[in-house]
Image (cartoon, rainbow, N blue to C red; front, side, top):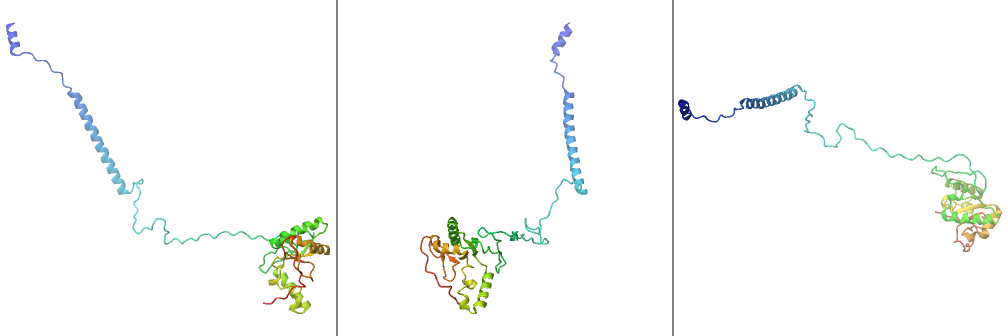
Length: 253
């Protein structure tokens, strides 16, 4: 016992230390090293694959690099491309006059159409539509008033084409033998009130009489003594008509 006591005094017992976890630390260190190694190897493989693909032209998803040297400006046409011209605007087709016969409201006879020197269809000679707005409006009122009095006013010749007026004047020249006598009945186209849409010839005789007596109420007057059928808008509605002229006067340039 004494010997044991002495030995304890000489070599006292120290507290035992916990065992080191050397195995766990080693395992973690190896895991980290493994992960880093795998990453390095994977990155090397990817770089190698990319270089290899570029070398063999296998990088299909890589956009090609286009040189901009001497490239045309954006939106500018290429030199080899022919310049395009703007399309011509479409033209509306011209309407052709109907060839079916029509009847007038006043005469009940088929309408006549004539063409002018410009080959355009003229307004019917028996219609008041080709007259000037002033004469047409006044004549409409006079026709309605005459109808209420039991008199029918028929239009025999309103606006004429230049072609027809020239033909009538040529016939008058042959009939009367001189320019002065012919113009008492028919004027050349450039002087004719019919060609200008400012004169109208009417019929029958009862209509001539009625309009000669009542036309002033609507501003429509008989102009010549030798033409009881010829009327023009010579006064304001409600005012008396001016004195009639014996006949048309020859005009020269």
